[in-house]
Length: 332
Ligand code: NCD
Image 1 (cartoon, rainbow, N blue to C red):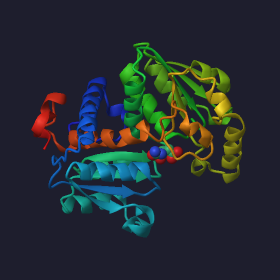
Image 2 (cartoon, helix red, strand yellow):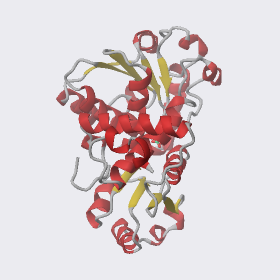
Image 3 (cartoon, rainbow, N blue to C red):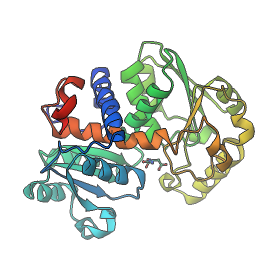
Image 4 (cartoon, rainbow, N blue to C red):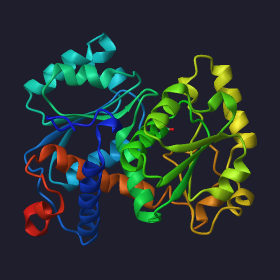
């Protein structure tokens, strides 16, 4: 990790950092259930700047900051309601936030590479909440946390389905898995999609470098039968240069790669179904009641705890050694 604690890419995380973050997440999850009120971010302000739509990421960051005793400022429609709409650069916006004494900035933006530009213009910690079709490292952290806690097997198969090519959550999760399991043989990946939505060379190159075992297929029945984790995604229509192609891709996923009750019945009993959400029809709503469906329960909820842990890690530099630091009243 960098000297300055921040999170621009999942590629910055190593196994030790991930393990520490997840131990802290366990603790926060346990304590919050007992209604403990934390104050470790008292006096700190986190700015949430969202230039693209968001429900879960923005709300859970906001809740996470408040649960830790901090304050939030910012804009949920920064693309149209901040000075960006007048042409202000991200660099100038960062300089302004720094002069107000903000402590960290969470940014979502449609453009890849914007996080590095923001981080280059300020000493403030930047957290990437999604940059175009680039990365979404905090989603990847909550996905990996959910997988490790719900599927504790030493060897597991994760199947990714839907629009793999444009998914920043899959890209970041693969980076994280490379750091977490690369070369250990602990994980096998199956990418299941129509050819036009398959992983690109950037993603497969990264998996090859990390020596992760993977397969690319269009056979959803096989993927469902083999997997311990089925990770479904929507077609990212906003990432297509031509709207017609996006609509066609969505139809292909609806026709051949969606999750129906029939298909879920072929999965292992202990497998889990994840989706970063929003769901746009690629999982039948009847699947929601299946005990394997975790997208509206553990997965979403863990987003709050993982983001709380990340904020503690970034904004409390005295959090160096993980669990012992935050045991008992020291968290307050
Ligand atoms: C994802 C995103 O924004 O990349 N959603 C999320 O943050 N939970 C996935 C998506 O929009 O399809």
